[in-house]
Length: 223
Image (tube, rainbow, N blue to C red; front, side):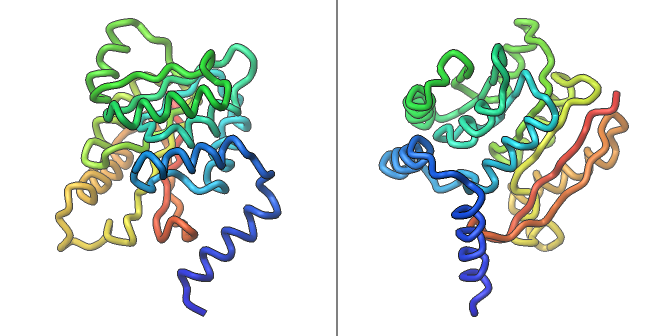
């Protein structure tokens, strides 16, 4: 059997058995597709993994860098307890408009603060506003800026904050020295910063599935 087909079928097997049917999330994915958004949403089992990570960590405040259509946003926001808050940053105003409608559909308007504009500018503005640290930070935006996002993530962290970075394997291209794609270079610099940064301890996991061959970084801020 073709490996890609196997990955897809196994993901479907997992989803059918462990991910309850959710009409809201299905409508969100349909709305994203209808609006012509790129198919970069996490898979349902990946979405639930983020949700479980946030619950296990006891997150009350979550920062998401990269909203797209809000699919992962909803998974994360649903992990929050009463009084929790999620701040999500999106560059593209069209994506943000779709995400806003999806967040409303999920009845999460009171929990989610969607900020539109360049993420680095938004993070600087949040610093100016004195926004409090976050318990859980998910980085899933433009990869060339991953090192800058990590620096800001550490700025908005406290000891115990969980930081997750998505798409850090890039079909294995992360180890291909001849690949100078800015996205791959951004991921490599992300690894370099994690390796040199004493305030966080981290690892990375390779994944296969309906989203192809990729992986994520998982770290905990120590100081």
